[in-house]
Length: 624
Image 1 (cartoon, rainbow, N blue to C red):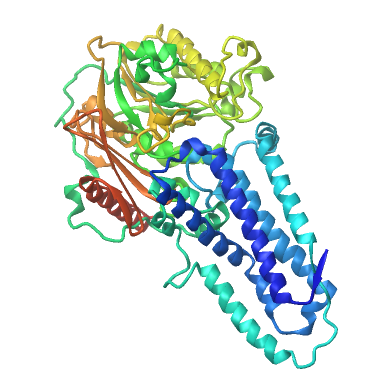
Image 2 (image 1 turned 180 degrees about the horizontal axis):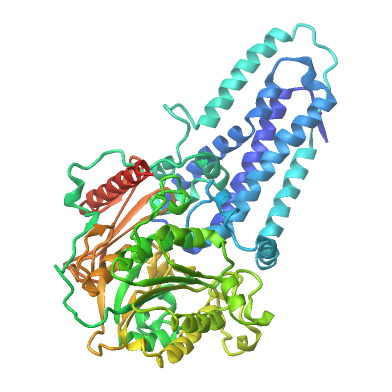
């Protein structure tokens, strides 16, 4: 145990210990997520390393600011044992442990969202599932994260126990010198905490100066991301605005038909939103490049219109507003949890309700999970069927419950089919599945049937595909079936397992299938990018609705060849479009603060989209 009376050297060593452990956890973050990051050369690697050092010092000095200030004050009490115990325990160890804890959690959580954790995570605690049952499952399945965190705690203890500050006994002629040292020390701490000399505290967007935007998550760390987003529910913005943004992006769907052209009964609409489904798992998108997990959907695709589907986010709570209301989340806080969200959201339920449609939303999960029931109320759905309604409909045994999120897909899809039989036609029915989600659990009787090597997510994808086969077999006997338009998509992709799905062009790839049993000529595969925002205006045109309404997507009926996708990534805005000259080649653009990359002809539409999006949210909030 090294003893000393130089408190300034002592504090410097304590900061270095915290910085070193944070950098070690950043290295662990990269090693656990190597497949998600790809460098273009050594210059980028060097930039990531230097950026990490800058953000690490800023993070540690910001979190330890009370500890450092109280220890730099030139007063005698800072040498007292009780005072030192208070500072070391509450103002040093607690913040450092918190920094390492969230960074360790995010090396796993990042695999699902591709974004560093932010302060909006605290909002999920009020709208999550059965957290009491989920926490043990996460600890069991991701035990290596727990082991790594314990290892960090061991290193913290071993490093700090070697430092010991002896109590000073004499204080003659030291006050003036300690005052000067305090001023110098505080100036150094503030300089490091601010990340240098600049007009504002180190912004998260500064990470983009060191690497490609898609790799910026390697430069920042989760603790700093959470700290910088606390209380930040501001509107998205771009540094340089676009004049006449409407020439690039439309925010109003104009009906393709002046009046309905079909005098027969309007078609029912069934939208099936699959939890964590990616094109990567489906043979109809990969042409035999890998083994398919979805034999039923592959067969159905031969009788449907298949688009190059894209999600507008990486979280379920972001996907549903995009699908049902053409309203994306282009900020850290999901739109439905934001103060900018209108009390009444114009959605498919309200649009079709104008034309006499009955609307119902089905979700396997616990009622209240992620606030889906409240979201549906805002969107104007007339009926909500969750786990409570499933339980009340018939006596079921515990085999129907997955012990984490709710009801398995097989029994719930059958329940949905039964409930749709009682809905007045025409109807809009939306189902959001749940089984293809961590903890990737299957009913015991299906465990052997769907055994597969590789990621456990693939087992549940196969199970959900089989549950869909049984669902369609069941409802195909119903009189309303042939007069129904089915849309099959996903809330967001699952984890990318191959190189091709771990880049801009693969992070958001989801199924997008439109199926009409009554029209044998309605099938094919389009290379058009079709994002979730496009579903609402496309359905409006397919149903020949003479309505104009606000939305941020583009109808595939009116624009069958050209499509685009927008999303909010790890602090950056992202835009992907079809290349007219080469349909299989997509054009990318991304912006973060003053930094931008990609094709210039996509930069302006992206800036225009962010601009108009903020304007719409601001206008809606003023109407509340």
